[in-house]
Image (cartoon, rainbow, N blue to C red; front, side, top):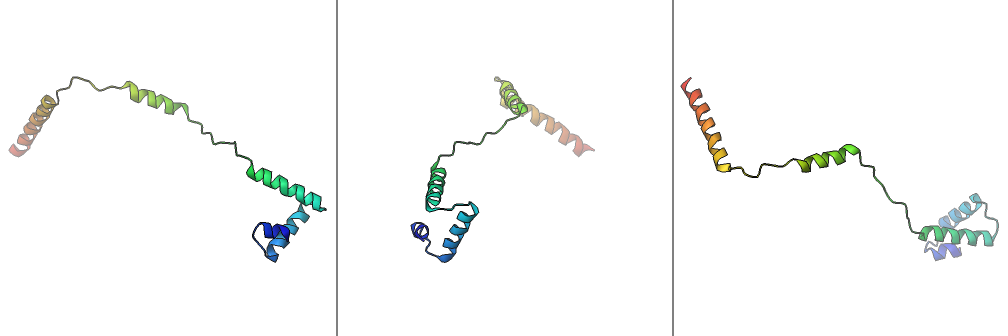
Length: 99
């Protein structure tokens, strides 16, 4: 009953489940129950040191290296390139209209 009150669950169902748990763990005395309670609290308060580690495949690093090694030409005259493309488009559209 004292355990139920300490955990703010003053119900018979909770008391019965605690007693069943003690019976399952073969706790025979009050000292055993207190020792179990202390070990449970210590385990609950212990920091979790196990972290998640992900394995990254080799191809991922190689892909990143390829992306950084490819560079665009620095001296591109975009206006000249645009005019060339427009001339090609004008030539192809005039041919389709004539036929």
